[in-house]
Length: 116
Image 1: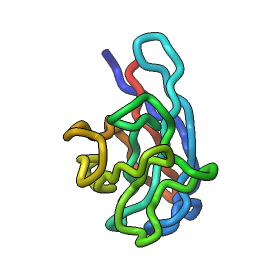
Image 2 (image 1 turned 30 degrees about the vertical axis):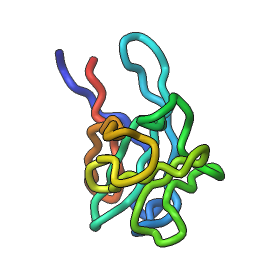
Image 3 (image 1 turned 90 degrees about the horizontal axis):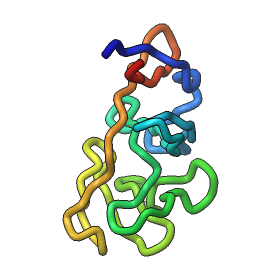
């Protein structure tokens, strides 16, 4: 299957460890919510679904980081995820992490890579 790029946002919309951008993608023929944040100077994207229960993470639209700005946090029960990998680092996620979504940053824009 071929990959295609779809614009998500301008790179300047993603401050380091700041507010993220929500977007939607299609997986298995179904629309699914996702988000992208900047961490370690790179855009990092994941499905917007907690590893513990299928709820969206952001506690306010686009707010995915905890108060320390070190981890992504589930708004429902406080599970913590490492923003570089999506791995669970604490809370009730029982080792289940976030599902990564491939993104690229080029020419001041951030794109999601979708399978066509």
